[in-house]
Image (cartoon, rainbow, N blue to C red; front, side):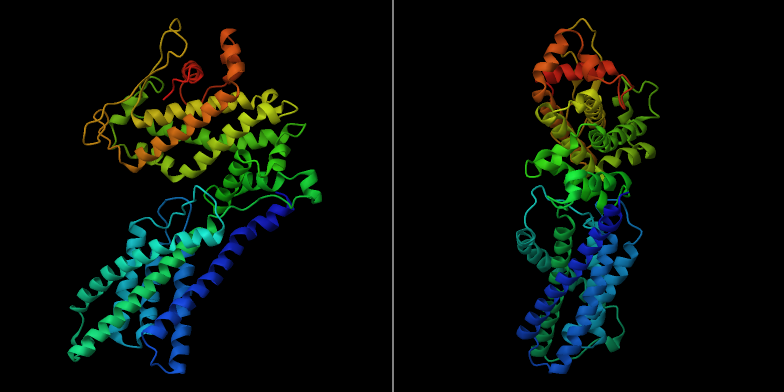
Length: 492
């Protein structure tokens, strides 16, 4: 790995974490001051200062624990107990900071924090959701404020009732005898404290999402010596050597996808087509690797139900209780974002090579054929997961003789043949992935449509656009017939 990547890339996530903690402290200060001014303005300056310090300490504890569980992959995290414990302690400390030291108040804060963390884990909110459109940080954060307020209101009401019910089981010395007026005032203050705490946590969660899903440019400054000699090395080194499930890897794939699709960083994309062709091979390899892994994992998930893995794969979906099948197929859900970025980047780069590749490195290296073969193979695998039956037609039939029969669905949105619900997360991800793959293939076919038709008429389509090696899914004949459907614009 180059020195830039070793020194700079490791600092990307660290710098974002430091920025997150800094902005989180500002948000916490504003919420605490608003609560103090409107609810408990009668406190002394010393009491306010101590409460301010303890509240910041509680928010720092929650923020750090939140950073340990947030991940771009929706896999179960072993650090969830840390979040549950930290949220409960932070809730207790926050409640005491708002309402003053009291065993009853501390317990309600503890219960509210535990309730929030449990809801957070149950709803899988630890997964980083990358936005479709990259906006400036201020506007991205501003767009999430209304939803954060609404969610804080709902959660604080539910948590307040939950903590109130738990108080019934507390020892008698936790109970208090108050006049009716003071009783209502205490509950109003307690609920306001719970809402302020949850609002702070919701904004903290949203701030973490915004800061950590912001695009990072893995390139030296334009005009520098490194930009003139090898501007692609930082990005490629990060893609090749960073951990598969790391945030750094996701940010690198996001940057690669935007470079390939947009013209803002045209100079960076032009560097991919340098004369030796080595850079383009490396870029194509990092795009192909996740897609090949996807097809391989789906094939492994289909194994065990049929000996014929090419033509009867769809029948293997009829045993959904197979634990191996479920674990392998759900990799589509875990790495969905990387798969979509890889497909989009590969398709855009291949399409643009027709006009921007001055040295013909994409065609000469065989990357175009590898791109088409891998994308079509992945599409077949994903369509099989969706319940479509694959069959190979006789060679004498018309061009585009690839038959794909969709399963029928009842009005209850249920796959009759496989028994799978269409609203299942795995099915919805498969449907979205198939759409991305189909769009990517059409992009390449549209760019090279004339060349592909010429090859098809000469009987050279398989030689020119299908790799000679065994595809990750299906056979070369299946891939060829599916490609014919795309040439006829009939693939759906």
